[in-house]
Length: 553
Image 1 (cartoon, helix red, strand yellow):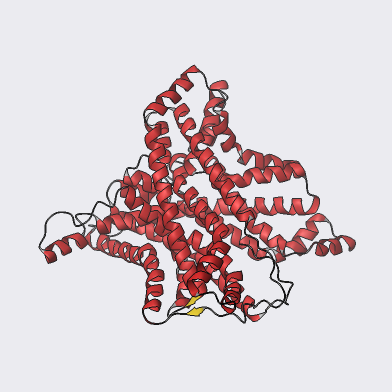
Image 2 (spheres, one colour):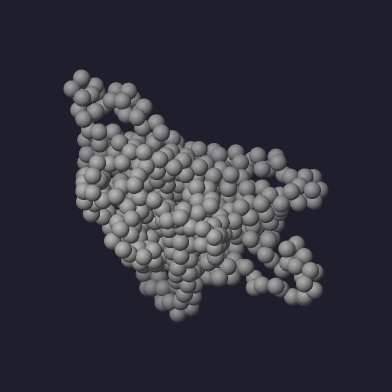
């Protein structure tokens, strides 16, 4: 069993090895291609990607930290609402937000036409949103919850108590925030920024729709338009190296998310209180929290709904509900299979590691966990390149027919990227099951299967359900790998929305886009409920003085 699971994990890690292995087979022609790229397109790809990722990093740091500090350290009207509402943009994929705001802000939109008539002016009232600055703003609105969530966790568990201690020592409000709260949350902020930058570099939908020359769009152009697998692999390896550096930075920041335990007598969460804000300060905090929710979720969803209503009334035969049912069934089928397979694999790996360990399996599981940091474009290249090599070596073998344009190829991409999500959820569930439970079961003569079926499975039911749900939603929103590897006639909602938007049929893109957003709300609601219940438990049960656990995100 352990050998089988190790083989499966290593097989799912093959896309990374496929991209890196392209350099082992590089010949003189491949190095010439690299030199040509370095003198032509590579500087543009690097510059645009760096500007995009850098702008997003600054934006999510400011918005995420500001909102987290507002709801954690201060008390103002609407604070309880914004504690969970600020998570809503997590349900909005960046490409869906791009479709909504492009339709709302373009020159021919009803908004601009109405304002031009009202003001009596001609010409565009603002620059085209399809630009680098527009992409930066859209990514900030979608990805700031990464920083908000981690910073809020770090601040909420320790900052209020330490701020109260600083106040008793005579420190003013701004000094308490700048010298106590923000340094305390700095590792969490940097971890969230690194995650947002990885998501930005992995994106293909927004970059392709806005016409940006980034690494992701360059990979697709080299593979699908220029039919140059070597060039695509080289670009993919550069992007993979950048993502690996960001992942290392994020893990380094996560390791610093622990602080020394407080001494006896320090104020607890039950005794410390957030600083109340009144008048203009309260309105400023309200506006700071309301703006990203409005721009990142409420207004885009409302505009998509208006687009859908317009399409339903303007279309000659109404909405394409029959075709929508086909797209939904294809999406549900692919996402459902991926969720079941990923959660099953995660349960098997976690149970085997818990029961018998194994260094090889543990290393293979860690290699598999790197897949979540891989962009979808890199995954597609990492799967197609080995298939091409095998097909050249054994022309009669049906390798390409099995791995490309089939359910097997799509599942390989999905499991390579999203199995780590399921594994992390199952590991967190096992962390709440003490090892003494297993020892007692062994003493009573329970075998491995009986121990899992009668003991672990009931205790891990919620974790397994959360793992399957997270994989389902992530798979439903995934675009680049699905766009390349999907079976013929199995267009998912994400692919259909992208194709409609690319053809400037934004009204038709509204229906699949809204469906993706509504399904994406499910894990956001679960996350907000979990945060609320943990906060209530922390406030209701104060730990004994002097033996508080070290806090971490």
